Length: 341
Image (spheres, rainbow, N blue to C red):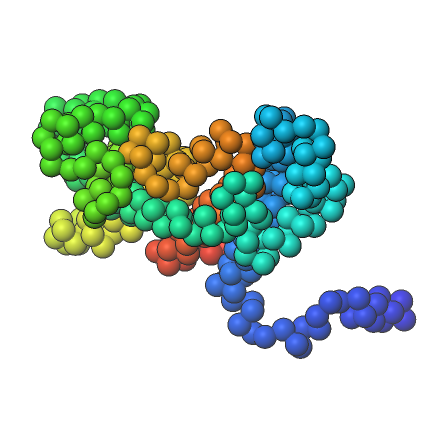
């Protein structure tokens, strides 16, 4: 009798009866999608709170800045009321969330609607960032596997040493130094590419190279180590025992396993690349979000800083989710956490 009562209570307090749960929702891909949607929503909520706190915690008086240094206290208080800075923090937070969901992302103290400003500048930053990510993955995987194949079993020792030293040296150079060197060589000395601005398609070349060359060097070393380990694994030795061609072994068996590690590593490097993109824009006078953020910080235009950080944070989360999806397509074991252990 007691058991029947417990079962009845369990059915009563269950949120969704099992009979109403679609069969597709229990598949690995459905659970994967639910986890990623949850990650997206949680990240969005955290970013909203973090960006809102920027105005609350950063010292300085935006009302005084907008009113001007010559304004008297009455004028400053009027500007503060116009900007809504005199309201309690929870009222300001409500207005901030409302502005996010209506797409305006708030109102700049100087340039109008933040959302409009971001729409004008975001394509420049995102094109460079996405291009750098794709180039990083392609070049790093090919270079890492190529060096591992050429130096396998102790061959071409000079190439192994040169690859390690050169990639480590380039990777240690900050992005603004790499950008400056590229400008000196290709823009000032050789005059084959523009030094800055975004007037033509060729203007994208140097910023993309400056942003991607460091991650390429870092990731290619990881790929080479993974390829060297894969050469010693049982599945590669079995494939070699079957007398398969070297190209087939490298592309059918080695590449998918190495690509898994490369994609995982690229997800970890993503935040650094987006941060590097903001710095790179200053070097190349790039009209992207980095330039907008720097100007906003100098002018204490906090709504622009808030909106830009929110957008870039969500872009980073979305790209990570896309990388996880590609990783799941290559290796379905990643659909279930802990399945690789």
